[in-house]
Image (cartoon, rainbow, N blue to C red; front, side):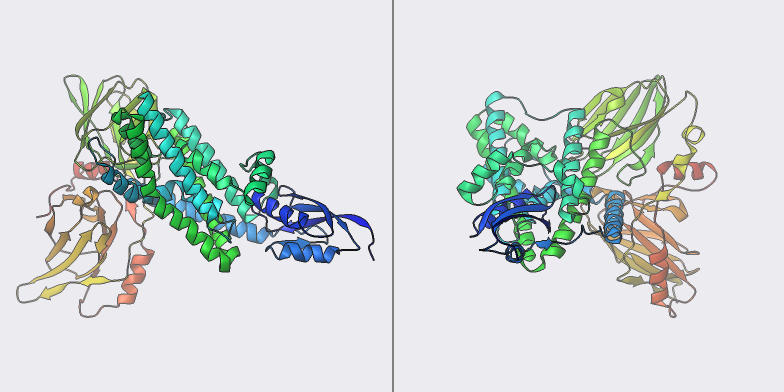
Length: 598
């Protein structure tokens, strides 16, 4: 039996951040019989000096366990390799799904602040663009709130820090008349650093690689101790929120420009204050929900939240990597919406394209000949992410304006050169071929479709109505902002078909229909669009930006359909992205391409 003053080291499981360390230390030091306690989050241990005549080591362990941490007194536990491998596989698969689906680019299609807007509209824009904040900073928000499942204070502090920093930036920008933001490769460095921080934070929340705990971002211990003594709880989320104004963010940069235009520190500060307050409810709700659920499902919420933090962090690293000037894989579906070739007029290569909300086009030009790239930006097509295009190879940083935009450069060497939006989220490439070469000669791979990774929904199907007396069949579907409804059609083989698509979408990418089986690129209008064809074999179709896909199943007898078999066939179908050059090449070989639905 132990007597007198003893010192023991306990291994503690379940610590997810330095605040856990501080929480356990406070509890132990305030317990009668404990002379001193030093808890190390990095090592996962607690060194306790106690009077064994007043309190036992089992009682000390029980006190720690009441705080929802585990105490291990035996040999060092072996890491669960299967759990770690399973978690990493799930995270990587989810990351690839998000990257290849272009999901995060959806969050950039929101309005920007423009001169002349009232304060009420700025607050409304803050509310609308808070969805973008979830995509960009939701992982950081979760990383600050999930470790504290007993209070809403971290969420309040994090959002308070954001509001304070945004307002301060507005005051400074309005006063100095210059936008405080990163330019060039520095934006990419910021995103890389933020992404790495999120990944490390997620790993530490999972507890799979304890060695990484030392790399956590934290306040110096002397300040933490003072804050804890004054308030009883760590204020780390406040400081993380204060750093949020340094994040490269489209809506935030637009607001900085707006504050610059006010020419007043008061007006600039008020503008940024109202915008930040508009973004706060959804961000606070995310943190509040995570802590609320955590009271009952702490471990599950922590695991799911940590995985989400890592996935978003990996995405941010990917975008920052490309934005920093490194060559990136261009096979992502965020890369290109078709491939455009020039026409040579008066010794200048002229390329015409249209700005899309979530995609940039890939273009192919010849070396040694000046390029005049005309990019039409329809009203409403410019958003927080695509508003500025960076072509690092030619030192170009172009800010889009509504209407015609001209980008000029002269390529001097052949190759494939990446370019991106200023946030690195939308990426594409410029292929430069030798004089006289064609896209097919220099880069035949661009004629080959690549997997789209888009799943065609099979929850419903449109069955054609056959008018045997008139000798034709009619099938009708809708096209909305959320895709085709339904996305599966069933028609009978050999009967002339009138396929009607009611285009009820405001998304510009939905005003073109791609039908690879018929080499068709069909322009569509709002309302009903009729397409006539005689079905022979089943085929897929998609919107012009390759975001939404559908499937036409051709059967021998419309009255005898195995709908489960049809859904199974669609589920097994692999969607593809067909470059525009594919249709041009097929047309040159005798096929047909283009047209208009009518």
